[in-house]
Length: 391
Image 1 (spheres, one colour):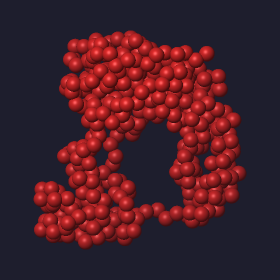
Image 2 (image 1 turned 60 degrees about the horizontal axis):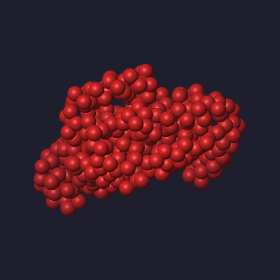
Image 3 (image 1 turned 135 degrees about the vertical axis):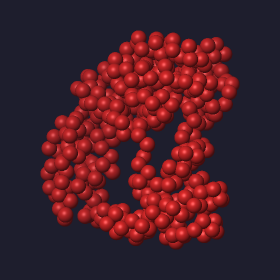
């Protein structure tokens, strides 16, 4: 039977849940450490900076015991580190891909025992892309208002409506975790679910991107010859580090288009860079010499160190045809087990498997290890044999 719990009203009393000093934060952290599971969420602003600006951290151990940690008022969030690193207390998030790095940056912690309700839904007979609001509506019959999605969470004071909205995001999550686990257990998927959650403890989940690889996301980079691509690699690596240091969006430091122009023209002095209209005025004024050095470093690379793109052993039409067949096979097996096929694999990962096979090796691929290999068994093997190997 669906439980009907009325949503919280925007009562000013919610301000009592706002944690704004270190002593109060220690008390809340201690209460959370004594609980089996704590819901965690963040509210942040990300419009004109490289790093998201953290406004609130929501914590909840039950429907009634919920708190809002004011990250604007608190410069020291270290009392949360023992909680985040505890192997005994489950940290319940919904889709924590953004939350984890945002929380790691000011605390320096390494998260342990993370549970993702979005991912868990995919092992419990639901789609693994459902929003938290959809899951709360499904399990509790409560429709939460989403009126504050565009609010400035770093502006103070927060309104009663903002406080109520933020608290509601975590008050249902501990029980939601229990219900999703129970559903996954009924389907025989609990062990697989927990195995998949372990990936959130991997350091790469919260590590910053490698600046040396950032050039691969630049639009148009594939059309550059290797010598120019080497220059682009150095220019974009500089942009990545400069954007972090200045805490500015990459595009405000140097646009992709400007980076391509620099890679093609390879100006050798600051005046030449300052004449380029595509280079942001502030960058041309303050960082032209750094760009000259980055360009020179790229030009100095010997040919054997030039970055290159791996050519595909299959044309796009052939690749798509094989991927369609294999994704359909995965869909049938996953649906029969109550697992969302989208959690098992994506088209990108399936393409990678097919291309790896075409090049002669699929050892260690994610679809052939762990719970995915257990789910799929030999489903993909005969389909892979139909893919031509071309070295």
